[in-house]
Image (cartoon, rainbow, N blue to C red):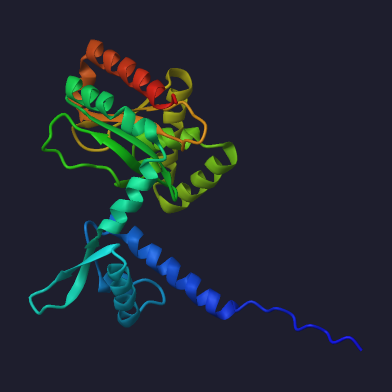
Length: 262
């Protein structure tokens, strides 16, 4: 009688533990953008199912691998962790996959200086607008690269939302509706107004902060390039100069076409 071979059974328990640890580690790295320049043991432990012992172990592992850098307190212990050079390596690798951004950096810088504005290029990451390039009118400005904002928060995010395929756009809109209750009616109205402007004029405008405006234009889609939008932010009084703001819109549109060209 032929002996039946023993079926191969995956070690699902160990795999599940490894996958869970990996996810928690990635969640910690994502927390860096929402908690500012550092994340603490308490921040990580506060997540569902978390504990200080587990949080400390995960943070120490990420630090040992170079993705975090421990910040020592007066007692010599590390309860706070900042991004390490490992994060920079990953970020640089991702941005190198969009060479047009690097090639056009001087164009973005010239645009920023000519109009005394900040120029931003963003894509969608986990349902938010992620800035992947930033040019400022002066060298003393803090870089916004890596910053994350809600899609509904301003023109840049609304432009990215408008560019999504219909099924994905519907998913994102549903999430926004839930997240912004009870003011979702006003939020959705602002989004639809931006969509109408983009359909008719190929740009949209918002006022993300008092005395500031944000003007965004879509970047033409290119093969093997993420969905991108280009925006500028500046003092609101610039909107009162019709001739200058029209020149700015034209420059943004030209720059967007450059970014979408291989």
